[in-house]
Image (cartoon, rainbow, N blue to C red; front, side, top):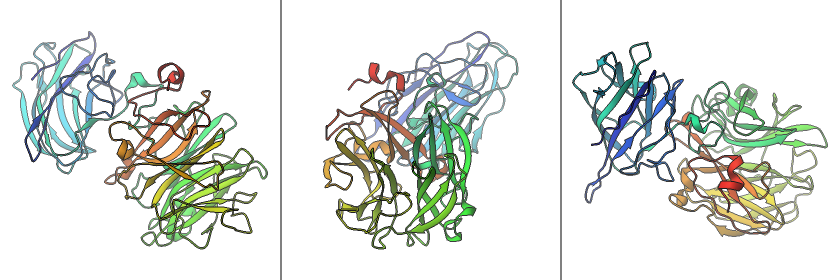
Length: 495
């Protein structure tokens, strides 16, 4: 077991050393993870370039982190658990090379629940052992809190820490501060007030130099207890909280605390100068399955509920998205026929209802009949229209499906799964919700997906990944990136 040590004058530096043990039914496999120069600033986990992680943020044996950002704050590392982790054992102590007056308290947490804590520890104290059952935990946080309020050289180690688990390996989560202007897929997204985002299943609208992101507020769980939350940004990185722009209380009662309001999307109608929000409204175990429509005079709302409907043939309306073509034509695409088939419907000039008369092949079309797709996203580049969707597997991920066409109403051709690399068959543990063009980078696009956490939906994460399309091509690929920036697209991520 290697202990990583260092000191920086005037700050408390906390180092963690972990050994992750993998157990399988056939034969045990062993691997280790050492974390060096890992720090926290203002209670937010930070670290340097993740040389200890592979492309999907999984632990890799025998490698370490490098180039951390030292601070005078306390420190922590959070590990996401998959596949039935069972036991966390180890010991904690202050490094014997720390300053003579170094003291700290170690603790282990599952969310807001403290699983274990040490007494105040000083340099030279005997390491304190722990053994915890973490089978019910989804994330475990190891914390070291400096006890002495004065700055001093302090090196604190977690010693011989071992996870015994089955299934998918744990991986590290949260947002490094030295990636402040970058996208970190799967990390905690925070607004400019430092509060985690609540805009799940969301969509983006660009209007007059500002991006607007609306999504489901799951802070109080699965049902529509809060409503639709909105954020705004000029650079796609720093987001201002615009608040709840469509409160749950403004919807019909069956779609409030006992129902759901899912996948809200907004568009702007230039003819009427009105912003429209479409959403999937449901209740009674998804038996209602209707489209909800709300309007506003400003992109940040507030939005006023107008009506609900089933646009075509009274067929069920569930996961949905909106699309405005270059000619101004508006479309809604959604999972119909009890999720068996996708419908795409041309809207009238208000974007608030289907165009009439309704004629299949002329004003609406069925896509991938019997394919059971949901979470559809549609966009246009050059002569090709692209449609990305997931299969239906509840909150759990599956392989994405790509379709292309020369018109929004098709015919649409299946092109396979555009995701490549490890876990591509699970869309990197995400589900599609939006695709936008990368500002200032023609041919580049940004995939936006939800990484659902069914045990704690409010702690579901967002994954944004860049990809490139050659104009006129009917295929592209999306690869995992641990972090990336818009400014680095043409330089670092050339196709």
